[in-house]
Image 1 (tube, rainbow over the protein chains, first blue to last red):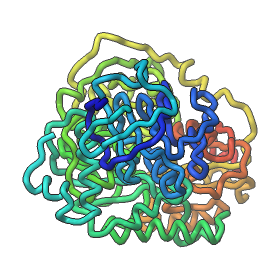
Image 2: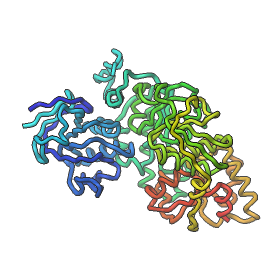
Image 3: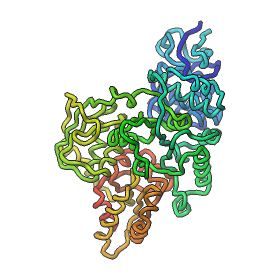
Image 4: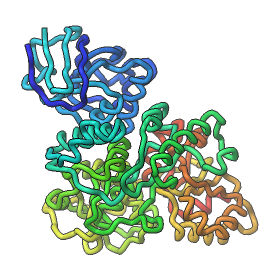
Length: 134
Length: 386
């Protein structure tokens, strides 16, 4: 099933979904060297975001978070793509410089949707702004 | 967002990878914020210079080619470029920091590392001029005191704007988004670091609403600088107005909060003895250097300072005030350029910092090894040094 959204950062990736219902401040929430979520207040605390399709409402906090996303990519620990309810400038700029595909404003809100669960395989097309569920 | 043919070409990569990336960032931010178009800017100011904060992400900056399109300046880096070996800085950090600085310089950005670009020669933007600045204290000063127009840019978005020479037209660039939304009446006498305390409080009170501030007296430029920095540290708003003073304070919102003397004085309640004194967040102006020198003359009584005492300023200001700086340093005070207490790794061994800065009150506990901060008037900071 194809769900339309908006292109934020170009590129295409397929991977397993990891969903957080909370906004993420990349500076402080994730270890840029291991890709593990270290912010205990997050519902995905302790999980690895590496090579996942990270689904979350959007970013928040320090704008240095953009460079944390870049560091994750440099260490080979970044998500392979991200899906936001509505992307913010921190995630958008970070994903663009790290060349990680991002789509937001999907026709269906994946964070609340029944048809998507953690570990489901999803394709993200950040260039054209859509995703595909199996 | 509408793009001109020329902008489309850059977006498609016809002017190379660097400009393509920069344009992609501007377009994404424009789309997210429903901007109608890109508009030309007169200058850009970039944060994300200290190796302590950006880490290995500077490789991205190293990959960029070409030159910036507008006059651009940098925020403080992690060390004094000339005196880092007198600081608590490792050779490894210094090498990495030099690489970051060189990468920015190679893009044609002025090799000026300060958070007060508006106090440098020809650095103050005119009223109504569009700019793209990061560094919250400078954004607040430029928007509020000078009447220039910038959103609160992040490190990559300010860099992208510098490379293209444009920024998306939304938010504080538009007149209709610059009106005050809440009235803050300060019902007490204010001077010196009281403006740091007031700003800290206002940032907490207003969040992302633009305040119209009513003051009993006219603050100095340096007091406005401290007010701007503290509001930026605790709030997420890029503009304030002061009734009867700042250039756009025309509307009076109905919602009103009164600040009493006790709301300000409670910030001075910390009694802990400090093991270091740090002044210059934001960087000291020439006038502040003169004020500190006078205070040192009064308080010294022939003695040198007995606690570590650092003053942070812009290199251009230090050069302009060379003789005065020599006199200040003769008391055992160190005048450091290009960096500051918060973004340098050289100041993480202290337990309690005495300062006149509200911005330090917010960031030192987070970024400087968990040190506590005690807010004091400048005069008391100097007195405590002896």
